[in-house]
Length: 303
Length: 303
Image (cartoon, one colour):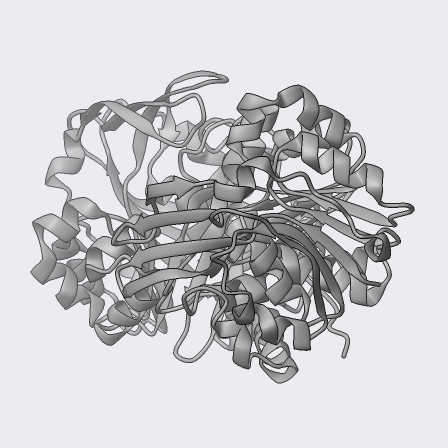
């Protein structure tokens, strides 16, 4: 099943303890697509300015990412500059310029409207709702959000939540949204407000899926060098949704595998700047890391 | 195989968002024994003052904990008072009185010296070394430590590390000991200084075991109410060592199961004040939670 993703298509300047990258391609829709496209077709809706190096996304197009929904508007692309701390546990935003993203009104192309899987990246919940109005019969809708919208537009966000099946957020966002520091209670609160499935991402600590009457946990993959954490959460979402769409099935086992594929793709994302690691990645690399997760978590019970 | 544990036998006054407990039994050796005794025999070496309610440990004796190595000395028992923050993520120490623990010199009774499994709770590494001098032929030695000894007596600690097979510490301690914020690299550093197995406990985020050429991860058990976090790490160590000693086997699968039993026992410890939860706990409760961990982490791989 093809996945429709709507989100930011940005330029990032990133400083990490290991180096610097200047105006490299990034944004939630880009990291998501780079990961999800390794599982099946992806359709992107977004906006860039005249300065965007669209040729850098060409390898994604060759891999089945339909970029025709990316509008090129007059002006500058969304630009973010940030610096990570020595231990990578915090980052300072040095500059944010919304550019053409400030007036973004997602238009879903005719050919994308029948998408069965929809991922609403972290944008204004009003716009996320507008996207849902433009798709005809999605089988599964997932969305992300952030503190800015939780504080700034809670009504639209709650309206949106009623219409989504899966919410993917980080632990701080889940706590803030529910107003509860306990993640299990926070997830239950969110479920009562719409999404049957809540995925809480916890960075290096992994991610937990809260289902209707079951839970699943996947660790972060232990790495000696985390080169650049930017985009890890979006790559997680890409692996998660990519597997679900490829399986075209939404049972317990599908969701469990989706969680592991999410963590696998997140772990690859942080090994390089931008989406560089996804250039050379193939099915063998992905399966190898999946099996490493299995070895790291599976145990034999013995009475 | 019986386990010898040496550590603190204390009185705790604890304030949590859910209530207060006054001068209840606690200390690393007590939490460890409460958990480990559900797997097999335990021998305790420690010291208490004249004020200690030893009758509160009577149920442990009935369960196979040999308390004859607990010396009762003139003076006050080790006392700790603390208050947890609203979200349980931090705690303030309100009072610490070492009492008879200040002059503690562990004497391992003759009948304990043949113990095959040894757990050196978090005390001065000089004393931990003295305990090792008193045991004849341990098959496996594990130890804990803390920031106080890492800063205050690094030489004795490094001397000790050469003689232990397993180090169990929390993430902050592992980072501090190795001087490296990356946990995988920190674990490798520790392994180069002695212990083949490094277990890093991360509170609600679970624990990772770093072996010679493999890793294993177990999550924290999601609970809606964490009543009192005190002793969770020691109960983890008790479940971990308890299973290894009961299995009398130290292969990959034994260590993996030991990690899960550790997290199971840590999750029970936080459900009540003191060691209260261990009074009523039976094999059925433990197995049930073990199976919940399995459901929460096991996934079927499909090509």
